[in-house]
Amino acid sequence: MQLASVGTSVGTFGYTSGAPSVTSNGTDASSALVWVVYSTGPTGVGAELRAYRALPDSSGKLQQVFTAPLGTAAKFSSVATDNGRVFVGTRDGHILGFGAPTTSAVGAANTDLGTAAVGATGGGTVTITATRAVTVSTVTAAAPFGIGTLTLPRALAKGGSMTVPVTFSPTAPGQADGALTVTTSDGETDLLGVHGVGTKDGLGATPATIGFTDVPTETSSRQTVNVVNTGTTVATVTGVTLPASAALKVDPATVPPWGRPSSRLPQSRCPSRSARRRRLR
Image (cartoon, rainbow, N blue to C red; front, top):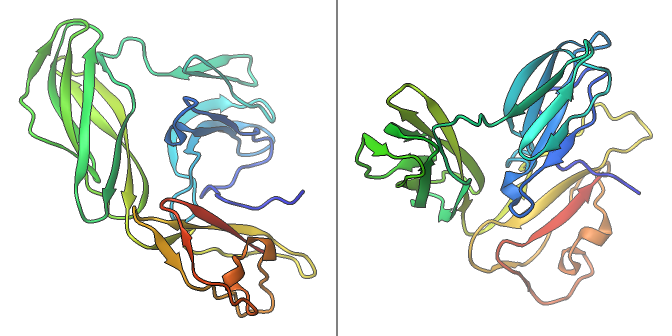
């Protein structure tokens, strides 16, 4: 079996860091998170619980979306998960639990806003439901998301709901995750997740560039590039140019026939949102 890198974190993990665990809601790839206990070294002092998006960004990096201090980590410990909670044991005999607070004033399911073309604006609505009687003072979102016309403040009874119009204006193709920041009159702030996909006609690569570093002589390093149709229409591939350097090789099983020098095959079509994987070593 051969392994290929498809995504990496920006930071490095010290000795005694734990093995990662992956969670999701089971149906939406954008909900997948990679949880890992970060340790600075053998003592475990200054450890952190970190969470990354499981889908790498266009540069092949895993986006860190959460961090929390753990104190002194147990050696090589992994998280346990159950019913929307994450649990971590520490070296000094404690079990720490993480999850959304049960006293949040409002809640909403993570909302998929669908697709929008780069440079255009799409969107949808998010339904906010109150867990207790509350007055919503403000609702904001950071780019590429925004809030449409909304009359506030808005009083909600326990179990009452309101619809928030959300815009999505992507500046680059690919997955985009964000949050609505909901502030209530009593000063509470809640974050509600939103998700969208930017599209652009043509082909893109994830990651856009790859780098082979610290590879000992007489050995090889294998990395993966996913070539993706980032638009919503059919893209026609007319040829593939292989690396010119003799030190770079492409797994021939991943190269379409029309990319090989001896090929005389007609053009082929890649269906919308499909991907082909290239392995370089």
